[in-house]
Amino acid sequence: MGRRIGVQTVEIESKPRIISTYNIVGPKEGQGPLSDYFDRILEDDLNGTESFEKAETSLLYTAVSESIKKAKLKEADINYLLAGDLLNQLFSSSFAARDLNIPFIGLYGACSTMAESLSVGSMLMEGGFANYVVAATSSHFSSAERQYRLPLEMGSQRALTAQWTVTGSGAMVLGRKGDFPYVTHCTIGKVKDYAITDVNNMGVAMVPAAVDTIKQHFVDTGRKPSDYDIIATGDLGKLGRQFTEELLLEYKYDMKGHYMDCGEEIFDAQKQGTNAGGSGCGCSAVVATGYLYRNMLMGKFKRILLVSTGALLSPTSSLQGESIPGIAHAVSIEFGVIK
Amino acid sequence: MKGEYTMKVEEKTIRKKFNNLNSNKIPKPNLLLHCFNAFWVGGLICVVGQFISDFFSYIGVPKDELGTSVSIVMVFLGAILTGIGVYDKLGDFAGAGSVVPITGFANSIVSPAMEFKKEGFVFGVAAKMFTIAGPVLVYGIGSSVIVGILYYFFRW
Image 1 (tube, each protein chain N blue to C red):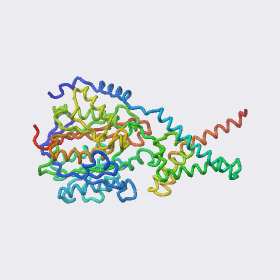
Image 2: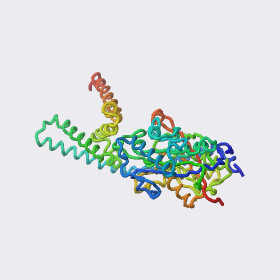
Image 3: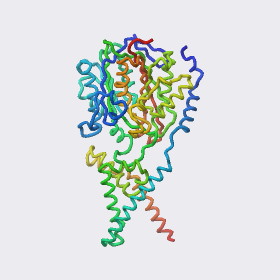
Image 4: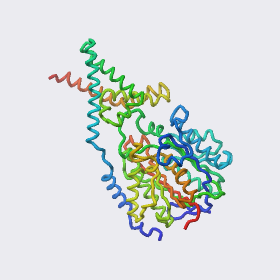
């Protein structure tokens, strides 16, 4: 049975395996540096639907149903679908779940949803409450822009610290058997807010949460950065990644050579005009289900720490002058022999 | 050793360093280049307006109707360029240069109207059309009323 270690971490003994993953991305992501690691790249970001919200729903539905097919399972075999997205009332997740014959738990963790759903899924498996769980999330550039920012055709300049919401969805199927990467630890983060109010600087606003969760994970497990082949934060962007490295040095954790940020890697900021990098729930989801998972299967990464980061603001909260609270959850995944 | 180092460092220190990084390391936009681009694009839009004004004057539009006629054409152009997806790219390049002229005003009304068409013509297009231009209209018209009242009482 799993147990609590330290202050915020749980150790998962039953090793819930990630038996399959599937991801689907928009055209812009497909032109990015990680294009080889996507299962499907759309040519049209509406995906044949009539609105961007419906397009995002179709992305999530495709990721979930294809990941189940890839695991050679049926919808009825899955005990829980854990999913969330950025839209009001979890539009994409709820409406994708409407067409899936799976008990559904909706989660909101903004862009931290991949690590959040994977953590909760692993705990459900550990508790013996499920044999198969699907953890999934999605985001869409255009649906996020219209909810949080200005209309698409509005002629305005993007700040240098602004990030580009990833159009994409990723799903993971957790099972009990087989030779696959498995979850060993989950560190659930606390909400941290260091009073950043600039909504164009969200990567940096999430840094305190990322730093706190990563530090706490190391303290709780007694591990250090070099115990991981790669530590991947969700969507801090270029600047956020630099700040995180510097702040963790204060705790004497040197991340150099073991650290990447999914948002920084998914786009070529120079060529694609994405400024600080990618963001959104889909960002860490498609990188985790693609680049990270596949490299684990190939044996390049034996132990990784996925730290999805979320900015828990709402359009209303920023209009009322509130600062941006951040959250980060960390999941440790292993595969193969660890030295 | 668990927590060997970390116990000594307090969150206060981290927060201080974070604030330090945030105030020093945030990249600053190149203001000179932005001003230059805004200046020449904005200027070019005005040249187009002047050209249209001269043309109307040439074909015999009366002088007191020239301003209105030019505005109508410029708003139309702004709307067309928004509709075919050019104005947002222009805006990204020129900033205030394309926002301040009346074409930018057209862009700020047409873009939400297009965006919210999916929510229907009443609660989408009509209701959201003025989300950006609305405040400009409210305070523009509001301040003109105040100036008008002041002018009425204190003629000079």
